[in-house]
Length: 74
Image (tube, rainbow, N blue to C red; front, side, top):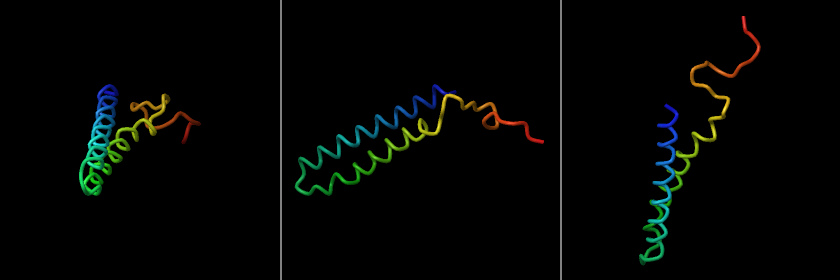
């Protein structure tokens, strides 16, 4: 299942890069630079969503267990 999650994260980052390129093109070619702002915001959001999962997940995380290994609780 982690392969699907990694693929989704990569798709979000790739989409963010495309939105950033579109924003840069609009800033350079349009008379009003504000036309590219929504695409720049979308680019930042997509890259954030795509990398957020990688920040949270560590190699020790195992979705099959309730939490990190620690002392036994009674």
